[in-house]
Image 1 (cartoon, rainbow, N blue to C red):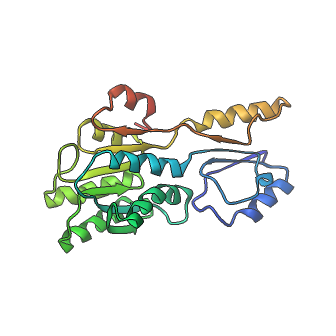
Image 2 (cartoon, rainbow, N blue to C red; image 1 turned 120 degrees about the vertical axis):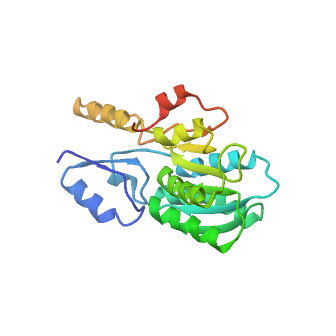
Image 3 (tube, rainbow, N blue to C red; image 1 turned 90 degrees about the vertical axis):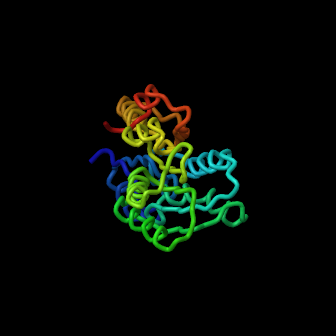
Length: 235
């Protein structure tokens, strides 16, 4: 094996694997998510700034100027770079008292579990007006629970829906006004890594040890079909 590409579910516990790869002469590339490890154990990292993703999303949410923010926060797999980053800025608002944490639970990226979390809050009778789900699949599950309960969501409706990853089907929900926000997780990292490998294969040296993908968030009131075509993942 010449090259090993890793997008890890958890940030810690990789040192022995990476050391073994190094000893075997296998060049490791990190993509999508960072690891807590020494830089000398990987060739390069082409990753998202997950903390910035969270900050961008929360700044958008604050710009909505709601009278109050009663948030259901559905987290991804605990300890992953994506979960840590997308949680950070929102947790800071909870700590500051500027937003209310109605519920905060992990659904480990699972749609059905996210639906159950929202159903539980609905059944409790506690009010909420924002669902901040750390990926599109969990946002989809949350919306299913709202639909079954007859609770409106999206632009100008009762509940703001926020997701991450920018799957095309999710961005179409924004375009239709059914969701409000989706945060990008870059789909363009593969080409960057391919170019790096080509450079190494030709005997060259890499210009950067770490490349941070440029990303943004999409608002339902401004998104276009061209945005979906350009930035959406999948079909």
